[in-house]
Length: 118
Image 1 (tube, rainbow, N blue to C red):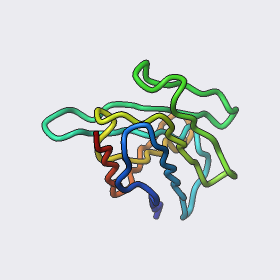
Image 2: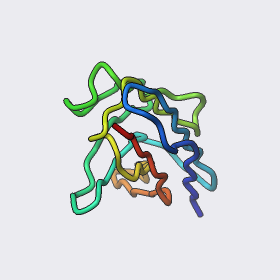
Image 3: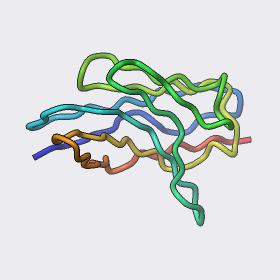
């Protein structure tokens, strides 16, 4: 059984910073990628940032230059969010892609609220 647990988040004023962390536990064969998504009220869940086991990163255009995804170790991924804007307000979800041979299975955390006040 795989568990994905996020921590961090909270309330911050515009221009401020917050950090999120995600820890993966359980019987994991091979992690292919670790991702952060977010979902604002009434909107779809969108990819914010991703990092592969090789360290390659990818960011949504809206967060480039402000957010940084990093791996603390093989099972922990962080998202540092700087220069936050009110439009960054959303529930942030950690997602892990685990490879089982040629297949990939996605696991999700429960989500953590980030609120940016203007």
